[in-house]
Length: 97
Image 1 (cartoon, rainbow, N blue to C red):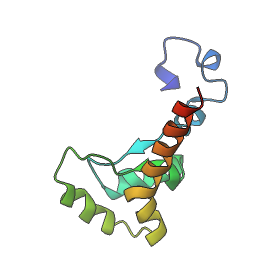
Image 2: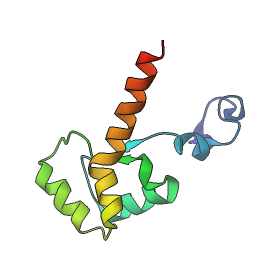
Image 3: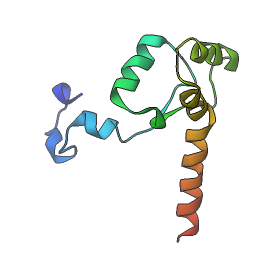
Image 4: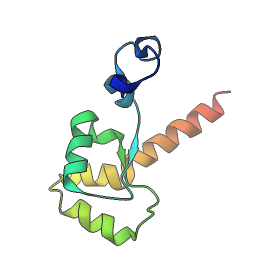
């Protein structure tokens, strides 16, 4: 991304594009393709990966997750725990104002 940017990326991403991407959460509802998930896990910890509302049949992605060789705790976090934690943060932020 930085290679093709039309602006100096150091002004909006002083720590680099990868550092900014690592701050995001990623929804894998559309795929559990092993090479894509391996690349994603190289960029972000499992706590930033979600299995949200699928655009493909839920069983397809769920079966794909089963085949990735994730630990049970990672599967539970991706399947439910990470989303619940994010929703709690939003709820807490909404009551703080």
